Length: 290
Length: 160
Ligand code: FES
Ligand code: FES
Image: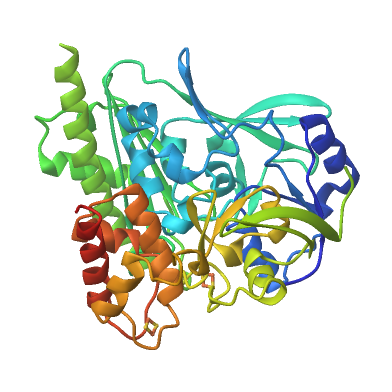
């Protein structure tokens, strides 16, 4: 592995001071499952790796507060998907989190890390975008909140400034009944990266939000308000028609994992599955409420 | 605190405490094998794909090739060397031998540690849970059948 220095600040001010000093010559480590692969390949210009695991202000927990679920930046994927508040309200995030890497990876990798590496294939990103998650960033200059949907600038690139750290992922609690689901298509199960991944969230008021990952340089979010995707009496043909308009916004790319044409065909297949499951869950949630 | 090129760490490995200085850029796997001569843990891919380097850190199965040794200050680590009791193989290890779950043996330490973690968190796993629990571990020899059998058997053993 390439050589670098290691620092383990004990508090947020200490961490922010280090970031001010090293700026883009520093990398943060929590789980390290992605960072260490890059460092093994020796293709990062890194002078110091800053371990954030002793910074108490950066939580490793999931906390349900009034109207929000807050996911701490050090919360590992394996824990997040087993949290009762996440399990009950955000099944698309659970489905996505459960297929990230392997058991060993999920025990170590954080949701925040999955977001910050900004891989177009990151599985937890489409569900979090579809749920309209916000990202809280802090630096010595203060704190700001960015919608996850506008967090990514390109593959591996986000709006995080070199002196900023992700402090919290905030997911709004559902207003009224909601049904959601996630699906992905890969060439083989397991440790593979997604060829395409889709999350869909259907709201009681008829709004449907779909997020597509791995099809374009960054995640694509599409919203639709006809109500047809949230209505169990609507015909399959009409659903297809609406899904196709939604999918028109996702412009698939060709890369080593698959061609553009393959992705386009598979997108519709996966979108249908997501819509069907999400609708079942929405119907269930509506029933439970009455 | 300053940036360090070598990092003093205190770790407990298989219930023995070690106070060592590690290079900032060395992985836990490198330190286990090259510095502490605990060579039971294997390296194959070196990037989280094969599971050969699996150990338990604070009770959680992790790929030791994807962990910096420096991060391990204060941690409790269990490696394949820590499973035996007074020279006797653990029931899980014995099940691997009995069920023909070992051929070349290179994947075995990681496979056993992943299975150990599975049985600690899910004492009586179904076949699907076993396959899922071991999906981060690759074996080029056995075709996995013997391995799944061994874990199933060891899961049943803990019953009695
Ligand atoms: S050597 Fe660590 S996962 Fe392959
Ligand atoms: S026994 Fe040879 S790799 Fe598994």
